[in-house]
Length: 222
Image (cartoon, rainbow, N blue to C red; front, top):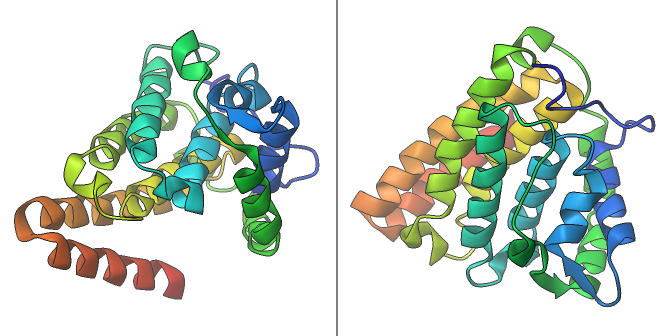
């Protein structure tokens, strides 16, 4: 399966380019979901998944019900990978959902430095973990993460969705850049998100937040 993920941009700025292209697609003062998809929708699945996950991680992800909505959208896209579609498709009703463009632009401006630092770490490597059957394995993992991302207990805790969304982001960027190292990191975060999700559901909010914090500290240290 070679057409699903596409390739990195010539300027090798995957994260920065994702946001820039989406903002360029926006019409007026509202950024529609359709704008996000059109920024890369005719080229590949990886960038679209990465962009949607990045929005969930950003301050925009604090908007009520947005993580749940984007979880459903990412799930729809990931399922299409499993069925071998060449381009993402979503219903027109979802494409018309919009949020404040100024907030997206403010996030892009404030996050420029760390996006640039992350972009420098992204590139083709360990391609055996990011090509062929790995595309389907990643899509399955993303589907599972979407179930965690859209779970009501997590949805009600501010920024708790950032953990599974971070794993989805790793898979999206891994598919985009054919970066097997990011794919492997995505699986590791998926394991952590599974534990945190279990703790949130069965152990309560405090234990879930503690497990998420420990995982986040470990990722940052690595």
